[in-house]
Image 1: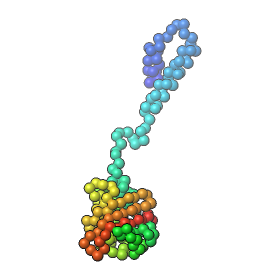
Image 2: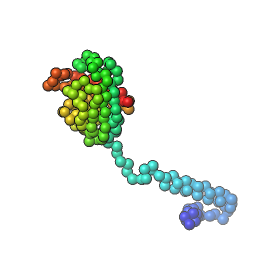
Image 3: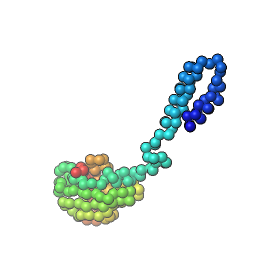
Image 4: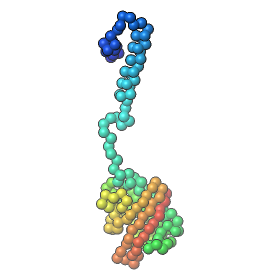
Length: 172
């Protein structure tokens, strides 16, 4: 039915000249129909998501997804305080879970100090910055993360272990 309509439109656009050879006309008809159906096929293809506007991905959700997991201190040279290597945290494991744009939870094992890394708590992104998290003990941590590596840097005050701390972790 639709094909007949297209042929009708074609005939109206290209009024048949009585001197036109039948074969040339058929060839033009086929070319025209192939063009029309190709255009329809291409324009009616799926967009991959069923149509509609794509939902933007929140960078905080993406960052939280990368953070989720178990992270182990990289090696004996991967923890420093005020620029000096500290080797008492070499067996520290940091587990981040439930992370979304609204934050998540953390827990540690083998932490040498609850002042530096408490046993557990929650975190949120500090002021909506994907490179800063705020622990539930009010410590702001700058982070740099990839799928396999995490660097944290933060300052602790008001205790015996005051200082600027940097930890390099690898994902387990």
